[in-house]
Image (cartoon, chains in turn orange, yellow, cyan, purple):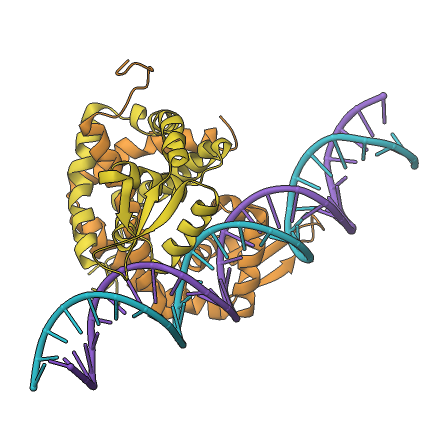
Amino acid sequence: MDTENGTRWLSDEEQRAWRAHLEVSRLLMHQLERDLQPFGLTNNDYEILVNLSESEDHRMRMSDLATATLQSKSRLSHQITRMETAGLVRRENCESDRRGLFAVLTDQGWETMREVAPHHVASVREHFIDLLSPEDLKALYAALAPVAKRLRTTRGRA
Amino acid sequence: MDTENGTRWLSDEEQRAWRAHLEVSRLLMHQLERDLQPFGLTNNDYEILVNLSESEDHRMRMSDLATATLQSKSRLSHQITRMETAGLVRRENCESDRRGLFAVLTDQGWETMREVAPHHVASVREHFIDLLSPEDLKALYAALAPVAKRLRTTRGRA
DNA sequence: GACCATTGGTTCATCTTTCAACTTTCTTAG
DNA sequence: CTAAGAAAGTTGAAAGATGAACCAATGGTC
């Protein structure tokens, strides 16, 4: 116990690591968002496109997509509606489960992806990856992977 | 060049470090938000409270607060309005610059802070800090500090 | 094979964020 | 001194996010 009420406050080392993580994650998201802006995409849009691009037949069930992108069903539904009107994606019925829907990449969506991906990767490199040494990368992954794992399982309640 | 069009795609090592960072930052924010919810605060609220608590006289100029919390003036203005109606904060005029305003912590705001902070720290420990070894912490900071620095200066255009 | 809890998705109301327009005060150059 | 421009904040409308309520379709189970 560090203080009279038993709270274990953060040490300086802990504090600065924590604040660095916080600051980087926010600034980085903003920067990536800015770099996507010229292409008329948001980070959310892009993430959906990535998921669909990497999937069998360029399609995913709504629920799976929601899980993969860590969004609520509701939010994803709105998001897909927007992307649908933008022509990047379309909804398609599911034969085997008639409640279900697929989100499917359109040709235009795929074309957009092919055009934008290189710029996005460049942006990730410029603002993050290329600023880290190979050791940094290893250390980062080693440190964060367990955190991610725990958060993933904790999710929904702890 | 890795491919015909000259894009330097991410290696597996790079990819997984990048995705780990991404995943942690999102899950973590959600978790912290959930843990603040019982106290009726959002992450944004809490961050404002922290900034004001740590400031001289528990007050900050709106612009400085906006900069410190990486928010737009507009967003901060709305945010403070909400916190003002919640009784956590009040606006006060600035003598020396009559365009300016201070956001000032109310007694209730300070009391809230004293009550909530221990829980928040516990949450940060449980979901992040305590999952990292001292070496992890050092490595994390060493890796991220330069990234943060660059993003901070890059901000607004690159 | 009828019932009921689950699952998959959408919708509506509400709250938050964003963006551009606007007011007031300050600063500075001439 | 004064006019032009910058800086500090606010405001309002439009877009996005959240959460609860809702409607089907499914999958047991008795």
